[in-house]
Amino acid sequence: MPKAIPTPELISRLLAGDRLALSRAISLVEDRTAEGRELLSGLFAHTGQAHLIGITGAPGTGKSTLVTGLVQSYRAAGQRVAVLAVDPTSPFTGGALLGDRVRMSRLSGDPGVFIRSMATRGNLGGLAAATADVAHLLDAAGYERILIETVGVGQAEVEIAATAHTTVVVEAPGLGDEVQAIKAGVLEIADIFVVNKADRPGVERTVGALELMLHMAEGAPRQLLHHGQLLDVAAPAQSQAAGWQVRVFRTVAASGAGIPEVVAEIERHAAWLDASGERGSREALRLTHAVEQIVQAELLRRLRAALPAHRLSALMAEVAARSLDPYTAAQQILSGLA
Ligand SMILES: Nc1nc2c(ncn2[C@@H]2O[C@H](COP(=O)(O)OP(=O)(O)O)[C@@H](O)[C@H]2O)c(=O)[nH]1
Ligand SMILES: [Mg+2]
Image 1 (cartoon, rainbow, N blue to C red):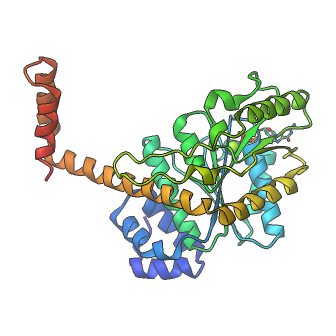
Image 2 (image 1 turned 90 degrees about the vertical axis):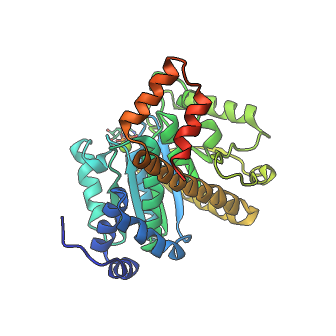
């Protein structure tokens, strides 16, 4: 482990654009250290500038290739871009064919690009919180566009993508299932659909199926994932969510075809979020979720500290034997927390 840098110094170096300081800060935050929490507290006032773009979809649809193309587009427009890969099979983490890795290492030589993969150890709920925190660091470090790639295979991954301002759902023809979105439940979270591998047969069928689904869902407001279980905040005005028309785009990410149109749509969505007031609603929801996660983690930590494992299992044995009811058991656990 490198020599510890005092938190105030790390903060000023990160704000000045020092990549090493940023990497160090990300590790501290990923490891859930007390220093990482101090960093986040100190940097929070410097966040809120970046636009977060979630890229989700089944494995092999071409998300990483698409991300590479999006990064190149944003760089050509002079913007600073960060990539967070929450995908153990991502080429960013080494799971790719050589050609992909060569293309991406070219990107990582650019000082205006920062690429990082999230460690996927631990549970997915924790990963979602860590991803949001790391995005805050990248935001504070001045990256204007943050692309978050997740594999849309489970609810947790989908939720990570949905915490972004703009969520892009990637499909590809010929993956066995006509439209993966139905299965993963991602229709509700998509702001933009991309059918990649448009050079492959069956692309029109996939586009057609998506457009039909969107047509049938027309008028129904986008489902904002609401995690407000602990903190009872007013639900964002759903009427504001209406007014954005989800459209389907075709790309050949491997050649770059269709990428400029996707970038233009992401930017159009960003402008719509501002104009409609929807950005404020999504931010409020995101931050509520963040506070909840912190409270939950702290409660769990206190619980474990207050109640040794053997006492907990003794209590549970009583419940299993029906000599103690679950409500009284819960009260006994909670009374040790205060
Ligand atoms: N034919 C074709 N292949 C593509 C296209 N985009 C990506 N691929 C290939 O599809 C494979 C999976 O791509 P990748 O970006 O790793 O997908 P991910 O798992 O969704 O991130 C790789 O071999 C890519 O080179 C495309 O538009 N057309
Ligand atoms: Mg990938």
